[in-house]
Length: 178
Image 1 (spheres, rainbow, N blue to C red):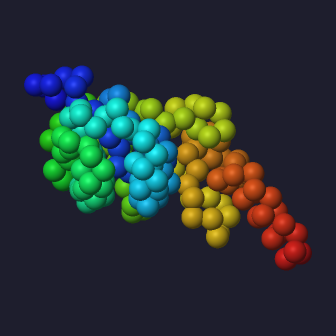
Image 2: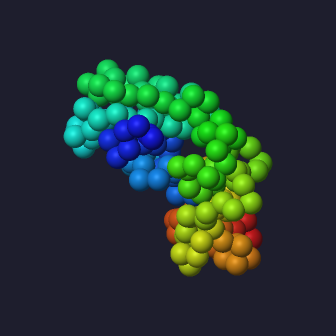
């Protein structure tokens, strides 16, 4: 990046919700919810103008971006790299003083990690648009999605639903069990 500057394109190999709280500066964040979505996303031709640019794919620990890099090369992207060890290793080395902005979504009880005591908060609460990097599990037990929610809005149990549909389904279940 130091050598090639703006000719380097960061391409997020994670799911879209992960990028809401942290990403590389000026990164391209594909419209994906699962890793399988990258196939259709790359086949859509919307990234064809990048085929001759230097692309750096990235993901949490380095596994998904290896797959994305291989998919891109197979589809004619000529100069594709990935960050060795993913965002985790990058964050350990550079903290928040490099090109990374925000928090990192992780897949354990912590939900997110920061790389320093001066992490920039880039996420926005689903309800009030206040700054947050806090994810909570949807209050509807059968929903596996997360809610990006600030501490103030989190105090209202009715706001802990991923969507209005989840809230309505929860209310319907509660009414049936009465």
